[in-house]
Length: 330
Image (cartoon, rainbow, N blue to C red; front, side, top):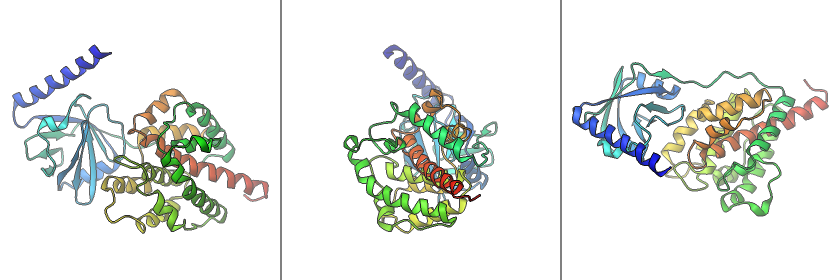
């Protein structure tokens, strides 16, 4: 395993050295572009490097954030996946926070001379959905709980995917989420039953935003999952109302990256791994391990936190839909 890892690192270093030796205008092909990223680059404007991490960096253009990453980055609404090896470190490529970037018709050009070309890139978009039958979705959710039981991280809010969670086993972040989620669930159930949005308690919304550590805190990811789930069930107006409610209680200095994901989620857009799970849930399929691998790839706990928010919405809808049918409603 160590020898394999050293080999990958050596390949990445060779790639970097080749990049600098060829010219100061080295071109890195982009392989895949998400739907929001596509809209931004089509504006052909200017931006700056916003933040840099080992395998990804964020570019800000006007009020939009784009995420550029190595070839192991997952497809997502903000993402541009390059051909750069997974072990690439972007700071070693001369990328610095505050650098100017020009977004052209066929490439991103950094002031350092590095170019990212997307003339041959594929455009990723999530699958199309049809509103599922509540019984089928309920069966899918039961299968998901069984498949995910031993894979859900102990940290974060992914634990709420399992309905039979033991309160004594909850970590501090999850403990803090119990009360606001209880209050939010009540409002969500009313919304589904009435067919119109019922505002969620201010204190509950405020408690979840920024809850937990990380680039995108667990609470933010969970709320993104709720908005994605509402959209996938056809409740686009509910998702828009939820986003408005979150904007009303944002802290003075909110995470800009979380805000970008809120925007995407309010449109029903999330990472490919989440959409792949939802697609099988909607037809009651058994959730295969490779689908859960895709959830694992989304940040430290972000994938599971977001999926938990989606499941939270799906379970509430299934419950109210089942009650409506028992009461003779269509």
